[in-house]
Length: 322
Image 1 (cartoon, rainbow, N blue to C red):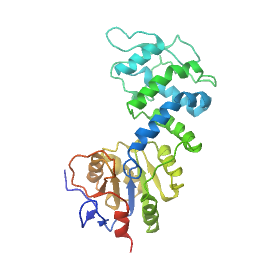
Image 2: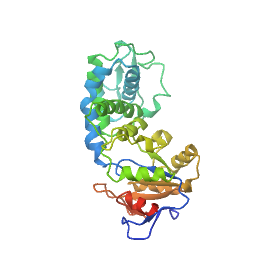
Image 3: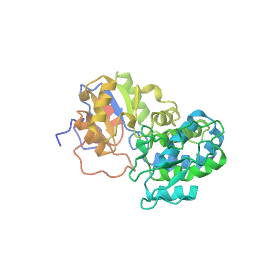
Image 4: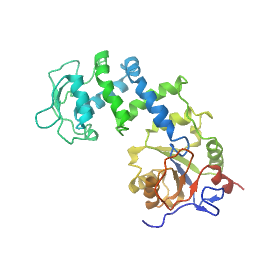
């Protein structure tokens, strides 16, 4: 791997004294393990979404956005080849797998209750192919009506959604449904973004110095914004100028960071990326970014790496300020 373009440290790694390249105009931030505890998503957000799936679908099941997401998730289930997901589908439908395939041909759970239509998934089918690769025999060729999400359909689908969350599947409609559930939780006070105390002052100082601050996280843009809107320090969204999720590309691919440069209309050498994951930093460095690794308390250990580390954002701010 080529020598990374990284912020320099004139003292011991993680100690105050991290100096940004003087060409820096943008700072791109990860969230988990960088601006909030890495445990927040796995120990708070995921369990909250899982425990509130049924009640949310029951109360919000008539909303067009929710109906559309449920339709996409049911399609994903129809095409699942994972043995555990297939077993859940068998329990839900009472239908045995196709002989020799391990994949069930399912009666439609949706389509206004018409159980005559069916979807057959080929082994190896990927849920990500569903939206743009539907077959004419799909159970979802028609639209849901306003009564589609009745209690029976919710009861049938929830075990699959819980399984997806447990597997941490990066399925776009699941992420968006989780975001809607979290939005309700933030709004009613059940959830709050546990932003590290050194983050808001750093955001303010960087912004005052004319730097543009953006977010790049695997969570959906809406989920990112909710963490900052309902943070323990109030609404921090005004400090940010751009938000990116995996729709721009996977965080382990250099091309994703090049695409962000295009969106930000700047050269990669002018961007500092801060993350707690070395594989993400590898990709950013390959794209030409300056990088720092966040080593917050509680972050998972990372493989050996060449990057300068920080434990707090004020390690950067103290050098940047006059």
